[in-house]
Length: 297
Ligand code: R5P
Image (cartoon, rainbow, N blue to C red; front, side):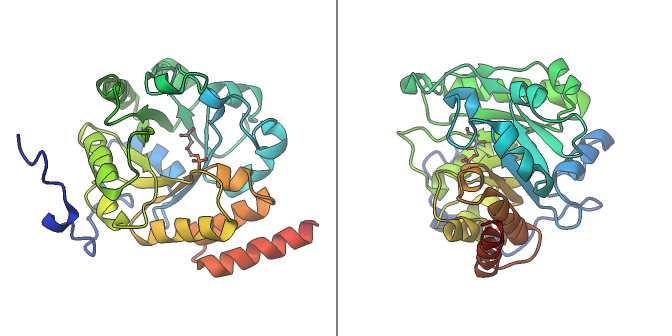
C-alpha cells in the first residue's frame, strides 16, 4: 500500500513557504464551492484576512456542566460580541442564544457518549439531522473523528455521511480531530488525521497546535485548519499559541476553555481577537488583557 509507513516529515516536501492559491475567493481550498457555501464560509471566516475566532462552548455535549459553562447565559453571552462564530450544541442554541445574534453558527452534530464511560468516548454517532441544521441556520456542522481508535471506521463514516447531507444544502462540515488517550499529539498524527478528513471532503478541520512542525500540518491540508485551545493554560501562553498557529498557516482558532475559564474572560476574548484579527503580537495582546482586567476590578 502506498506510503503506509513513509510519513516522516524529513522525507516530505511541504512547501510551507508557498501559500496555496484560491483564485477568486479569499479562503484556502474553497474557491470552487457553490454560492451558498461560500457565503456561509464568509460569515465564519473574515474575508479581509481569511481568519476566524470561533468561540467553542459545546463541551457539555459529553461533559455536562463544564467549569465555566455552568450558566452559559451568564458567562458566554458577554463574550459573543467579540467572536465571529459560536460553536455550540442545539440545546444551548435554542435555550440561551438570542435568535437575533449576527454571529455564524457552528453546530455540534455528533455525540452519543459521555465522560462517565471514558473507554467508550469514541463510540459517537451523528446527533443532528440536516433538516435540524437548516432550521438552526448553521453555517458549519462539527463532527468528531477518532482516527486510530477502535471506532475509527464508524466516526469516519459519520463524517462522510454528514458531508453528503451538508453538500446538498451548501453547509460546511468541520472535521474535529479527537485525540484519544492512546494517541500522541504529534504533527505526524495531525497531518494524517486532517489530511484524511480533507480528502474525504471536510471543508474545515480542527486540531491542536503542536510546538514542532505545525506548518507541515497546515501546508499539506488543502482546506482551512483552526486550532482548539485545549486545557486551560496561562493567558500569555494561550495567546502565544494562537499567534504561532496563525503565523504557521492556521485560519484562526476554535477556542473555549482558555477563554471562558480565564480569570477575566472578556479581556481574554478581546486579547485573542487582537492576535487573530488585530495584528497584535502575544506580548502586546497580553498587556491589553491585563489592562482590561484591571479596568474591570
Ligand atoms: C470538545 O469538547 C470540543 O470539540 C471543543 O469545542 C474543543 O475542544 C475546543 O475547546 P477547547 O478550546 O476548550 O479545547
